[in-house]
Image (cartoon, rainbow, N blue to C red; front, side, top):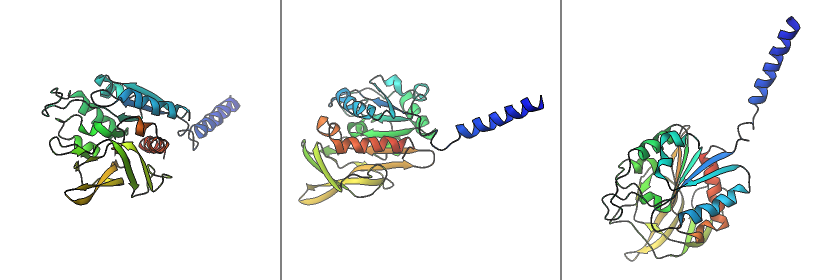
Length: 252
């Protein structure tokens, strides 16, 4: 009996060591929800292109949904990272006069404070216009009546800070996209990539990628690239997105 008990104790200790081995947690796939839908952009096509690229690594399990209910807190428990790439709920802007359902701010806030990673993409920074604390979550928002974008064309971007999101990217890169500018970006945002344009006869620098939250519990980044396949199909953009998702999931 004593031998049996000792054997069971040894097996338990070995199992405990195995489960806590470095790398065991890293081997789990990153579960990613792409939340799309709305006006202006081919959300499903673009998200699908990145999902196809991510699947090649066999490290990511990706889902795409245009159902706002997918952002309920109980559903978000199934994911490690949410990529917001949509154009929805523009209450008070003269666009989609539909108020943001209360469960979306509640779900996303709870998700991030509970350790989930969030990446806000392109037009999603203009979504949820009646959610007053949205800016505090993503670090900057589109201001209706003030913010604008240049005509679609070649967007030249410059890496201004090395970070897990920008690791290995060229110092400058370009692809076809829109340039969002004159935004309301919080001073606390850590800018990683920027660009310049002419405004009022002056050359003005504007942020394109920033980290909004980076704490032991919360990781949120905003990326303004992403109008259509001109960016989503670009290898540099795909590398940046892959690294952003890994960082948000605490794998980088």
